[in-house]
Length: 107
Picture 1 (cartoon, rainbow, N blue to C red):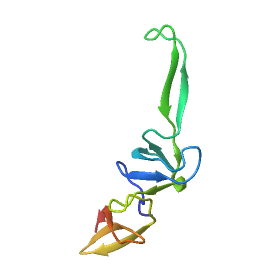
Picture 2 (picture 1 turned 120 degrees about the vertical axis):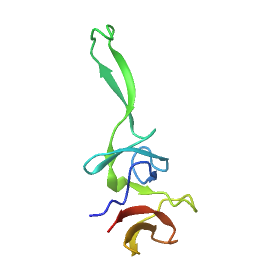
Picture 3 (picture 1 turned 60 degrees about the horizontal axis):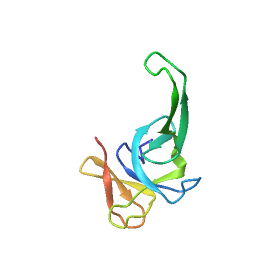
């Protein structure tokens, strides 16, 4: 199946504690994405030689891909994705407006 969401996309969060926020996709996991500044959790670190006191750090945790939508660059709102093939190139397209969201692959 073609990727509806890719790394470095700007996405809109549809549900959860961070509903309504937007952010940049940092990483893609199996069916999850890590979005910059969204779903931030505290990670507790054990004391080690490098950090003798241990401590707590904040980091972004993964959220399921079904909870995010790509942002249409012209309207600035979340959108569903369609795929169109022209000249041997498969492109992602916003469902309502038809605005281009980027290249998927070349065939």
